[in-house]
Image (cartoon, one colour):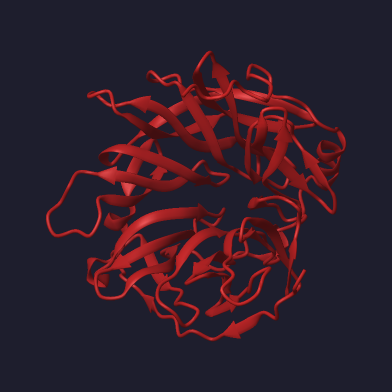
Length: 372
């Protein structure tokens, strides 16, 4: 495995402050090429994502190029970051963990989540009787594979893992959000407020009280779509949209604040009909309404929110294209390092030591082959 040297690129960042607005916006810059996109944020203020064809981690005005697992022309994407700045993601269909300036292959195909203990989760290809299928994995200096079709998307400091499993009913296939803890996988079901056929979990709060994702349903015309959901202590509710047909919940903090993106009603002159949202106090709000209109940007996707309420997002500008940004609530300061301890490490180890379990209420892999 090649180990690239991480390059520190000091990209000028600026903060635009609007005293009457809810959030200030910091533009994170790029790795010297065109554009950047955010993917996640830690409680200590690290942001990860990708710029051009390389993963990055950003903190306090400095964007670091994480390199790749391969040579020239190889690609990488950062997907999640912890309080120490460790990043998980993928490079050319190999899951990676970036720690202490080194990117290493951790054996899976895609890395999706990481906690403060450095335990990573994602998906890996498994050769079942019916062929290769994606399955969830958990990495902690050794890999645990959950032997059903699906993916692990996030892990918190309690060692709780969420994601989705794929089941089948005859020729029909569907997904179900799951929670994995103490060696047991639990089917989280479907939202109670509506008619839904599938669900996928994308994020979990550090205290374990909230899980977010999206659930599959159909529009009034019968077209398939997905709606963001919030699961709180076993009750899953659909959050609706910003006026369009679909929405996705991507991240949630300990206060139950959810971020993601939603289709919006078509507006003349706008580059896209997809906006970032914040869901709090029972209401979904377009994040564009909470920043200064003088910035001349459109927040298209919010990918992470930490317990300080800081939000990682991607903004669009007609002149410059996409750029990763950091939103901070007005009046909130820097997170205290003392609050970022490793919670529940023993529980994490216990969960990983329990072995492999199939997902209750889902078809055990391999599922039936597609007809035709």
